[in-house]
Structure formats: C-alpha cells, structure tokens
Image (cartoon, rainbow, N blue to C red; front, side, top):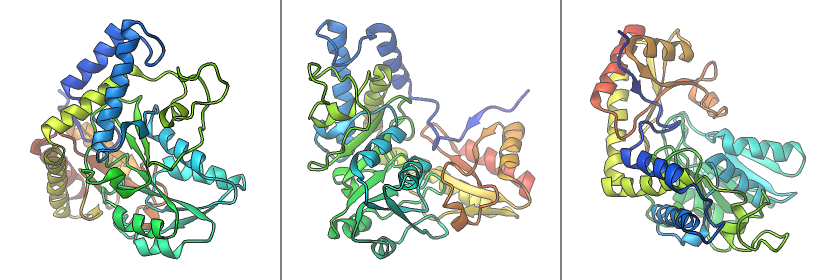
Length: 380
C-alpha cells in the first residue's frame, strides 16, 4: 500500500481548500452562472454582488483600502503585468531585485529587450533579503518604478517594505509589491503595506481558487490598461472606462473564483490570519530545526514570514530528492528554481535549485516528522 499523501506545496497553491470555499465556488458555478456586471436580471445582479463583496474583502485585507481602488484580474501574474505595462513609459528606469519572481522579471526583461526601458537588478544576501540601501545606490534620474517580491517564494524571507518604500518615495518613485507570497499570511497594518501598487494571489495563502487575483493602487496612481475590451460599463464608447476597476477588468470575470476569494477571505479573518500564519511558520521552523540536525543537509534562508523551507541534500539533485520523498513517504514538495532564477546564485543553489516544502493551515506536526524522517534516510 502506498504511503498517505502529504501535500507540502502551498507556496504554489493551497490544498486542500476549506470546505466553505469549495461550497461557495460550487454554488456560483451551478446555481448562478451569470456574468457579473452584465445584466439586471436576478442571477446577474447576484453575480455582481459577489464580485463587489470579493472586492470589499480584498480591500479589508489590504489594510482597509478603498474597494474602488481594488481590481480583480484573473491571476497575480496578470496583475503584475497590468501594473508594469500600465505604469512604465519609454525611457524609464526600473529597479528590480535578484529575489524577484519571473512574474515581474520577465515582463521587465521583455520591455528592456525592445529597448523601451532600462533595468537595474539589485543583489540580495544568502537568505534572499535585499538591503534597502542597495535600492538607493541603484537609483538613477530616470528611475520611475521599484519592483520587489514581498516574501521570497524560495526562502520565505520577507523584505523590509517600510524601508524600501521610504527610499523610493523620498526620490519620487513608485513601489510595486508582488504580494503573491504574503497576501493572507502577512498582516497588513497600513494601506498596501506602504507600497503604491500591490498585486496578490487568491489561490495561495488566502486559500482561494485560481482564476482571481488582486491589484490595488493608491489614489493618484493610474495604470493605463494593458487589455482592452468589454467591461459591462460605458459600453456605448470605444474608449475604456475611466474608473480604476473598469479600466483594468476587461472581459468576463471568473465568478466561481471570485466567490471563492470572498469566502476564503472571510474564512481566514474568522480563523485569525495571524494565528493561522503563526501555525504555518511554526511547522516550517520545526522542519528547519530537524533538517539542520541531519548530516549532508543544508537549510537555506533565515527568519521566515511564510511557512516555507528550502533545503538541499549533498550529492543529490533536488528533483531526485523530491521524487524519493513522494515515493518513500508520500510527501509532495516542489523542486527546482521555483520561477525565481536570479536568487539561486546568491543562495549557492545555482546547479539545480532547492527542495521546497511549504505548510498550510491543514498541515500538522506529523507532516513535519514524515518529511524529516524521509530526508534522514537520504542525507543521514
């Protein structure tokens, strides 16, 4: 009989979902079916209400921002692209970091390859953390935008957003925060953590489903639309609507995903975001402690803002370790570069990346023990 499945890849997507989230997703798919903002009949009005409630939940989790400044694109990668392509102009200089995800690095690279902008990539330390002073040192007269990943999807380490925002704002720039790995696990005690623009996932730590994400910009920051099309408003015009959400929500929304976003946010608030996050970080800290005691195993990173642990086993390719863990112990983890290619030169993992375990609210200490015991049979 195969070992029980132990899912430890929540940094990619959370699973299993809370039953309430699945119920909301299913109800929207089966009982409603209409498109939000596209009619005045009962189901369409209910679909619109679901979308607006989801917007309100996201606004609350972003520090009580104005819901009308929260767009709900189909994914965090799209949200980041909407922000970058909507804000950067030819001739601009953009600062990114070696700890960033390809969701921001690739659109910046594409723009630079066409000759439209220039980019400086600030280095990070051996945990994936960026020194805010390095942002200041990279500043140029043409710098318009700074892009950072709030929490590293490789190490779980958090950037000092407050300090980086201070550096950016003192020089008149804008800060775009990739909050894919922080939304739902790092409490937001001020609007957008102090950034100017925030892009966030619904299907990771928030416990929602793929198909919906969040893009917020403070008043006065107005991205030009990357995608044009129908919005259900100002339909008599060939121009995109003027209001923030209308400009950035072309096309039909994924209503079940929005229903899941709304319910996931409410579920997390009721459960307690900080309590849930503390439990996930606790499991990660326990795993890191156990792995550090195993010969031939190197744990990567420092104090973690999310329940993420990356490690390597001497003499083994991370992909082989991941395969062994699933076959021997039913433990499902991620291996490789995790779509963050530049950080590995600083972590000493350029050869094959890392093995990454990430813990969600339904994981237990038994999962930690199963993983550490299985690694001990490899590295010990």
